[in-house]
Structure formats: structure tokens, C-alpha cells
Length: 350
Image (cartoon, rainbow, N blue to C red; front, side, top):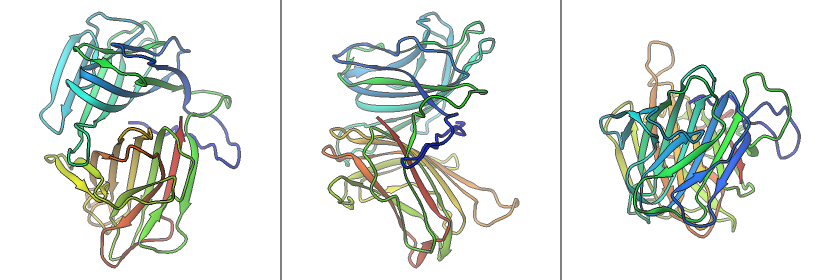
């Protein structure tokens, strides 16, 4: 996905606002089979946050501008399995037949005369509790319309269950030539850059928000750095108990899972080179916290002769009483550190 428009407004100052703005939001006040964004002003680029609280059997699909014709196609992989495809479909199917909660982040181009192409990533709770590893889905889809821009979005259920109260769809957007106006959706909550070496990289306490976007860069020192991800909450406690579960794949390999874990594996296997990590988190106090993440490292050594590594995955923190207000990476490598210049940035929105 293209994340160059991240939002840089600080809690302590003002900046240019050429970034993702909230265009529309539809939130259910009772159970239903459709979540409507309502009509919004067309923008060149669209980001969609879908948070579903599912009651019974639910299968989610996206439709644009109320188009229920066979004008969609998609390709997707569930839990790293072989790709499934659908053509001439009446929606972009965004998940399998599921109960529980799920969270999808997607991004679409929105040029009137071109097909609307999207990249979607989804995490599903897959049963409550840390003993159940979450499921993940990677997808690309398109709406074949070449005469209109997207100005409304529906999330539709085609199974026997319902989207429950609190399920919602949030639509963000920006134009390529957008002026400096409006309010950024993603507001900076924390920004920490190490000025020395240490075995942890921690955001410190920040204001609780329903949606979080996190950027991390770790520079290894001494024996290297691979950060085990942990969350803290409002009473000042960092949770190091067995309350996490994750699922991930590395470099196109088969999925690995960890249940009832004390942390989340959110890094690649190379601990002796620089690493980048990006996360999206849905952070409702009374629900398990669902995480989408992508990691990249420079590989086993520096230089263009060494292929970088990638790892992407999903995770959950099973706390259902608090929101995340602190994020920490503890080094897994004995005797290793995060060097000066390593940083963590946290953005959020309700």
C-alpha cells in the first residue's frame, strides 16, 4: 500500500494538512446487513477502515456508489493459502464466513476514467482468547467503472448473521494536488527517537484512541535487535502476560502461528540490519485489540548484493478492559540493543 500521506500534525503544534482527511463514517446503532458511509466528496485517493463486530455467520463485501451489478473482481489469499479469484462479481469480498470481530484496512485509487484498484488487508479475531491465533487475509480488488469517482461505500453482509451495534466504516481521502486545509485524521500521539543505545524502544504513554497507526525503525547495535512487541494501558501497566496471539508469513513461506504468547513477533529474522515496521490497530477498550503489521529488513548484510527480508502478519491483544496507551519493543537478542536514531511514532484517531 502507498502510505506517503501519513499525517504529521503534532499534539504540540500545527503543520501543513495535506494528508488523509475523514470524508465519511457510517456506524451502526443496531444490528444490520449493510453499513453505509453516506455520500462524500470525491478524492483521488481513498483509504477505508472497516471494523466489524459480527453476530453469527457474516461474509463482508464492498460496493461503491450503490452499484450491485457484476462489476467487481478480486484476488485473495487467506492464511497464506493459494489465491482464490472471483470475476464479474457483485462486490469485492473482504472476508470469509466468520463470527467475532474483524478489521480491514484498504486503499483505492479514485480516478474517474480508470478502473478503481484497491489493496486490502484484514485481520480476524478467530475465536476469543489468546489460545486462538487470529486469521489474516491479503487481497487486491477492482471496481470496473471507468466513468465515475467513488462517492459512497457500502459494507454488505451476504450471510445469515448481522453486523452488530458499533460496527463501522470510516472513509478517508486526499487529492493529489490538495491544498493545506482541513484537519488530518491521523494525529501524532507519540514520537520517540533514541539518542543512545538500549535494549528497548518505547513510545511512552499517549492519549487513548480507537484507531492507531504506528511507525517503527530499529537500528541494531552490539549483538543486534529484534523487537518483541508489548502493549501497556491507562493504569501504567505493561502487559507481559500470555495475552497475545499472532500469525505471520516471511518471504512467501507458510504461515506460522503463536497462541497464548507473552508478546507479538513483529520483525523479520535478520537482527543485524536496520528494520522497518508499520502497524494499524483497532483499539476499543471492551474488545480484543486487532493488529495488522508489515516488517522489512535490509537483509543479512548491507549493500545491493543482499536481498532484503519481509514479514507481514496479524495479531491480537486479548485485553477487553483497557485501551492501548503505550507500545514497547523489547529486544529478543541477548546483549543486543537499539542504536541511537531508532524511533517509534504513534498516530491515532477516534
